[in-house]
Length: 120
Length: 403
Image (cartoon, rainbow over all chains, first blue to last red):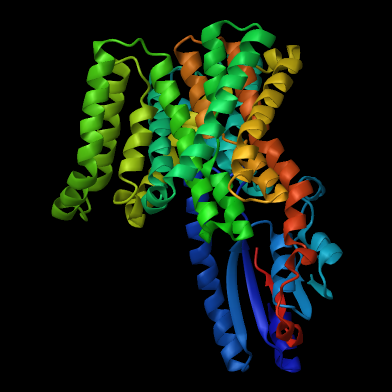
């Protein structure tokens, strides 16, 4: 987030922060709704300090919480808003985890319409 | 193992391990708990103790049964009554297609192809007829269809589909006697009165530390469940109906629903799903994997044959229709509830139970994997978004992943 904020400040760009709630698969009614509600509250809380930092740096900021596969939602939203750059973190998953679920950053790199910056 | 606390520690420890696996692999806790129950029963049964996890211990049976009932109630309470009122025709058409196709098709295949007796075949049809409201809702949120009229009608259709499953489970295997008539008559009266009595009762006495609301809900579920069992039916039938009739009142009380979820996920459903998994016979699955494959294909193909035309008839394009059909082929909770009902009432034997639960798990996982691999990206990749506004192209924005 630090990198995205400083780049947006330097380039006087608008920053669009996307949080993706990934439901457990297969989703089951009660658990799914619990995950949605908890995640929305958690992301809303995490957006608060980002909004404050953006305000201090005079960055135009937009936030959104969506549901789905993280990589596909990032690609989808980036294209919808015609983002010039995607900045995303990289999680150090195990080989088994990556084999089973795939890497979000690899998927975004492969399909995104614009440059992608992966921050370690 | 006669030490109650040691046995409880073992089960809750397994639930904890299952939850960690669910978090690591981003799978549902229910699925994880079933698999952990199966593996734990196999390992503990073979290596340590003859009885394994002792899943038929009375207090475990009670907690597991309560878990199934409360989970079913919560599933019913997710219904949006307004959507159902406005889109009931479409919901009825798609929901009944989604229920009757697999129900009759899987029953026929179990009976004529696998040569199961008629009652186990009916049970198989019921268990494999389910769908998952949550899975379909998750897809709608991803694709943004949840706010459309057609999307809402599909969601309501899922409730109809599962209602068909629950009614079939509650009535097919019970002898039709005077007790059945009394059960139905009392149920109709209770279901008609609840939407009026419950909000009044909660307004008058609710909102206190003593958790009157939770006790009231549990009393209703146990009382109607007891009546259902007395009539030879199944306790989840009234639980689902109570959830549906209270969806517009109790279902909107987020605080109460959250407290019930804490009780359900923290204590009850781990016992239910681990117990359901512990009865799966791995040797039976290994001995005849073709049986599970046949049942899986039966469920998938009958679901596709019945749901796909119904969904297409409601103006979804081919890709969306295929995606919805795959998603409507899932369904973990009601599938395992039906199978466990059959095992407990000796409608099916342990091998048949294992095949059905194995198929339910496979049908919960494989359609999602296929859909994510072959269908979903095409909806979301840029070429699907040709109608964007030109002025958006000049915006300089970045998207950051926060997952």
